Amino acid sequence: MRHLILIVILAVLYSCNGSVVNKLLKQQSPYEQYLSSLESSPLASYAMVQDWKQAGEAVLFDSLEVSLPYHEIGYFDPKEPKAMLLRYPVKEGHQINVSLDPVSQQDALFFLDVFEVDPEAGSLKRIHYADSVGTVSYQVRQSGFHALRLQPELFRGGMFSLSITAEGVLAFPIVGKGTKNIASFWGDPRDGDARKHEGVDVFASRGTPVVAASSGRVRRVGDNRLGGKVVWLSSNEYGHSQYYAHLDSQLVHAGQLVDVEDTIGWVGNTGNAITTAPHLHFGIYRSGRGAVDPFPFLQELVLPTETAWPDSVKVGRMAIVTAPLANVRRAPTTSSARAGSFQKNTLVNIEGKSGTWYRISLPNRQKGYIFENLVQPSGGAINEVELTALDKVWEVWDAAQPLSGSFIAGNAQVLGEFGGSYFVETASGIKGWWKFK
Image (cartoon, rainbow, N blue to C red; front, side, top):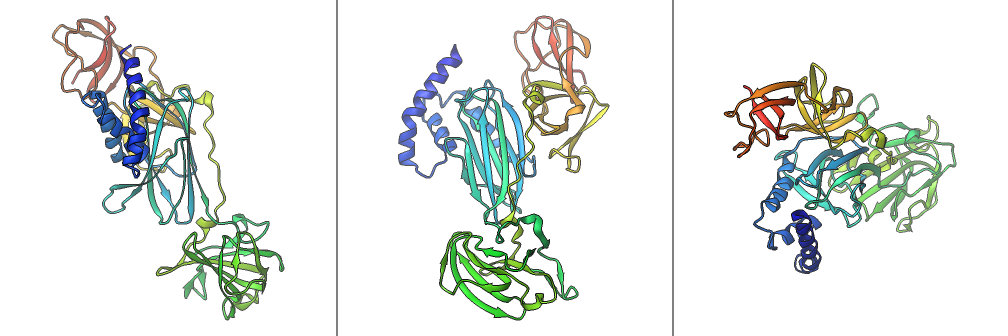
């Protein structure tokens, strides 16, 4: 009943204060607006508000890493303020698409914030956030690492489906072709390794239409020794110049405005490609930096393999390690760095599932991924201990104070263990940590 009253109060406060906050603080993200509404409400002094804020701040130090595309089915316990953070590599020229779908509480409000990771300081800077429907798409201007923070509003959460994908921002420059038709890549040796390839080569029949990879203005049309018949196209939208070389002939003129996928010429083998099969050399150049790898700009969207809902039945449950020794990884792959190794009967909390991996948290709040076959739900006692009236039980593994006023003497079932403590359930139904070392 208390939780229900608080939820109603929060809903009223957020609906009333949200518009005011929007007007006064237009640059605030939805996450910041919600936090401001909490801190300016009568609930500001409540521990649950501080716990929610701390959860969102503490998770920024997490080091879980995933590769794209990524999909998981996850769970937030509505009774416990929590957040999650995933770091992922990005490349200049990518468009990143993040989508969250609440499942068990479809009206729950989830906050999605995207951060840029400073490679030297390791600090995070917010660069994007999701709209009200739980999606965000943005272009990557500089290769590196980004991080996604996901946090539900107070007393909400439940099961959710999360996907993160990457795709190129440009259209492919040859009709009917794609990245699978690229035969020579960025950085390949040229002229006996005297220079490196500053683009990609796409082979196609002579006379195949070459189209603008984006809208823009034709900057130059000409002929040179290496590229033969070439077209330079400036794209204001993406802040770079595109170079189309070895054309059989050009169809545009300098100063002309073109739309994406307008034909600008035809595939040929002019210039230093005269002895090779017809193909297009496509390059991208940035002012002050020179050539950049065009492949990420052209990359097709690859959808992640979605985790089947029947495989997610263990998500949101406690589990124990069943192997003699199990590695917990920073990413859902065996090639990733180890976050630690843990013995049989170690208690973990399953918070998400991606493919054949569970995203877990340990009693000390350490997080990672573990292969699904190495754990099973904690369903019964693995041992039994005798507790005396002098023994103490802690609600959480690293609590400063034991549970007070609890009668724990007698037999207790051991449900799991971690770091010199058993997670026990007493005869009176009390659950907590009992230190045996």
